[in-house]
Each structure stands twice: as structure tokens, then as C-alpha cells.
Image 1 (cartoon, rainbow, N blue to C red):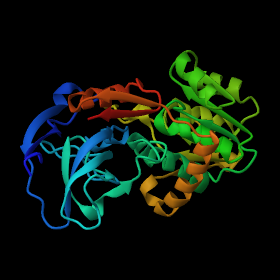
Image 2 (image 1 turned 90 degrees about the horizontal axis):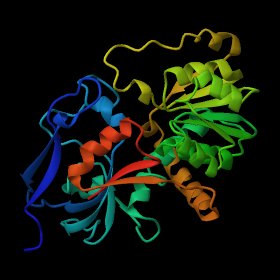
Image 3 (image 1 turned 60 degrees about the vertical axis):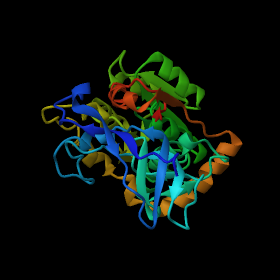
Length: 336
């Protein structure tokens, strides 16, 4: 068909960053699209995600997911519309969720995409509240931190994609009190609007002081998106048998030297604390449960999610760099 493109644009990793990424670490390329083989679909991406974990994949180190390759396209979550198909399972016109973002079109096996209903929710929702960030928050609270009704929960990075949802989900699950940290007064105001009981700006006072003021009687659960001084402060505030879900450590992702652990880790012994790291992909069994519960919470108005958009594939590298600097409220996305 004449309206099916034969070329597309993609962002490749031009070089590995040292410290904070710069525009020199990315390159925009024009490439040919291969002809569809049996069982494949051609997807025109409409929205893509940039996420903090991608910074780790830019380093050539062994981790839970393979590093990006230099001179190869980056990838990540995206939603697009099928514009050509050689599969009976996925038809032209359907929207699909897949892992080949950072490009305008993708040729994919039909088995590697998930059909999503964009009449039920916007395409972007499947990268946020109905996607990985929402499931991450749910897994961290339920399976990892084993949150119980009445718990006092502290969430760092409370204005981010996962943080916003973690606080709201904790409330929906019956938390007695939810407190959060954020990097500006505007973000603090927003998380309070979303139902947090208390929040503080960690850039205007030490985290330990802000947390003590927000939760003077201590906390039972800490959902850690930040690491560093936040984790140290949380350990001091955790009560007997407190639990920590170690989700991320964005404060350390651009570090060029090894970062020291919490100086007060020995408190974990006397308090009987549990600190457990997790990767959301380790809990696929909870995905259906979360989607069902999230749909109900959304319908009830108990779950909201902010989105910060940049426009155009050319804007994707800057969107990612801005994300690492905290320029987003809620999910950072790129419209294509």
C-alpha cells in the first residue's frame, strides 16, 4: 500500500554518559523499515515513555535487564496504532502496548504486543496509571512491604509517576496516614491535593527534619524511590518491624563514584526492619489483580495521575534528561 511508510526515525545511544546524560549521548537517525513477515505487525507509535531505570541501562554493566547498545536504538514502553498486519491476532486500527519506544514506527511480532482499549482510557494511561508505574506502586505496597490497614506510609519522590500512585493506592488499601516528599512547593501542594495527609519539600530542609515533622510518631512502611538521605531518614523513623520497599534510587543514578549506604543501617537490627528490593517484572501474577482494582479506584475517583508531555521524537532525549532533574509532575511522556 502506498500509504505504508518504508522509512522511520529513531533515537540511538550515540555514547555512554558519564554522570548526567547530555544531548551528545543521543543521535536521531533515519532508517529503512523491513517488509512485514508472517505474524508481524507495523505499529505507528503515538506516545512513548521515558523512565528513570533507563539511566542504568546506559551503563555497560550487568543488571536485571541488558544494557542499551551504543549505536543501536533505545527502547522502552510505548503505545501505538497498528497500520499494517500479517497476523490474525492483531488487526489494523487496534492500539497496542509494546516495548519499542524511542522510534516513530516499529515492526514487531504480534505476540510481543498487547492490545489496549483507547476508548476505555487514553493511550498514555497504559504507560502510567494502568501500566508499569501503577503496578510498581501496587506491588511495592502489597507484595513487598506487606502494608496493613492503619499503617503510616512514607513515599519519597511522591510527585513522580510511581510516587503519586503509591500514596493514593496506600490510602485506598487502608493506610492510616500517608506522607510524602517532593522537590518543590508546587509538587508538595499537588500531592496533598491527591490525598496525601502530609508532605514536605526536601530541598528546603534536611529530609530527616521534614519526615520527623510530617510523621512525629514514626512510620511503618517506606516506599523508596530516591535512596540516599531519604533512606537514611526513613530508617531512623521506622517503628519496630517496619518494612521498606526498595523501588528506586534516583538520587544516585547519575553518580560517578560509589555512593555510601545509610550510616544508620545498624538500626535495622534492633528494630527488626525488613528492607526488600524488587523489580516489578518479578510479579506478573499481580498484573490482572491490579488492573481490576485500579479500574474500580479510577471509577470511584480515588485514583488520579498527572502527566507531563513533550512533543515529537526529537524532544525525547531532553524529556529523559528533564525527568532525571525532576522536571516532571507525574508521568513523563513523549507524544509522537
